[in-house]
Length: 448
Image (cartoon, rainbow, N blue to C red; front, side, top):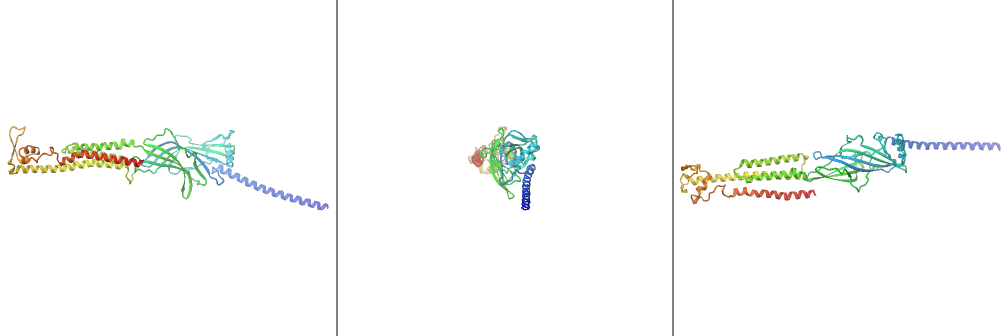
C-alpha cells in the first residue's frame, strides 16, 4: 500500500509540473504577441505614420481663412492667394498613450487637464499631420517674412483620446480656367480644391467644420477691379482610378465695369464723336477732313491693341472686340463718306465747267466768243476768253440771260451731293445711338 501511495504521488506531481509548464508557455506566447503589438504601435507613432488601425477613416475637420487675394493675371490665368489652413482630428486611446509618452520625452508634459500642448516646428516630424494637397495650385510656398507659419496643438482628454489641431499659413499661385466672352463684364469662377495626396477616401475624409457658414476672410480685403465672393464645397474626385475626399473654396471674381468705362468706352466714344466734326467742314477742306478721320482711326487702333495686350489670345470674340470694331467702323465710314462725296462733287464740277464752256462757245448764247465783266479791282474792262472763265462768275453770267437760270455754283445750291454730306451729320450720330441702345442691354443681360 505504501508503494502504491508513493507511486500515485509521483504521478500527480509529474502531471502538475506538466500543466504548469504548459500554462507558462501559453502566457509567454500571449505576452510576446501583446508586446509585438505595442512595439508596432510605438513604431508607427514614432515614424509619423497614419494613426489608424481599424476600418473607420480619420475625419479631418477643416477651416479656411483668406488673408489676401491679389495679382489676378488674365494672361497666365491665375491669381495669388495668402491663406490660413486649420485641421482638427481625433486620435484613439491606443495611439494617444504613445503620444503622451512621446510628449513627456520631449519635455512637453503638463499636469493641467484638457489644456492644449503646443508642439514647435522642430518636433512636428514625430507626429502624423494631414498631407493636404492643393490640386490646382501652380506653386505653394511659405511666406518669407514669417519665421514659423505652422503649429500643432495636442489636447489630452479625460477619456484617453487626443484632439489634434494643426494650423499653417501658406501662399499659393492658383490656376484658374478663365472665360472672356463677356469681357469686360465677365465673372470668373475659380475653385481652390484640397485633398490628401496619399490617402484615399476610405482612409482620410475632409469635412468643413461648419458647412453652412461662409468662408472666413480678412475684413480689410479689397480688390481693385473685382468684387469677391467665397463659397465652400465638399466632394470627391477620382485620380488615376483612386477616389479622394476633397474640400474646396470657390472664388467668384466679378469684374467692375467703372474702370473700363473711363479707360475704354468713354475715350473711344469721344474719338468717334470727334471724327464727326469733319461733316461741318467744307468739301474743299481736304487736308483737315482726311487728317481728322485718319488720326481718329489710328487712335482707336492703338487703344484696341492695348486692350488686347491685357488678355490672352483667344479664338472667340468678346464684348470689347465688338465695341472697338464698331467704333472703328464708324470712323472708317466717315472717311469713306467724304471720299465718295468728294468724288461725286468733282464729277459735278467737271460737268459744270463743260457746260460753261459749251455755253460761251455757242453762237446762240448771245454772248459771242468773249464776255466783258466789270471787276471791282480793275478800272478798265477785261476781255476773258471762254477757257479762262471761272465757275465763281457763273452766277453773274446766268443773271444776264434767262437761258442760263438752271446754272448755279455748288457752294450756293442745295443739291443732292451736298444733301448727302449734310444728312450724315444726323445719320451717323443716330446710328451710333441705336447701336448703344442695343449693345449695352445685351451685354449686361448676358452678364446677369
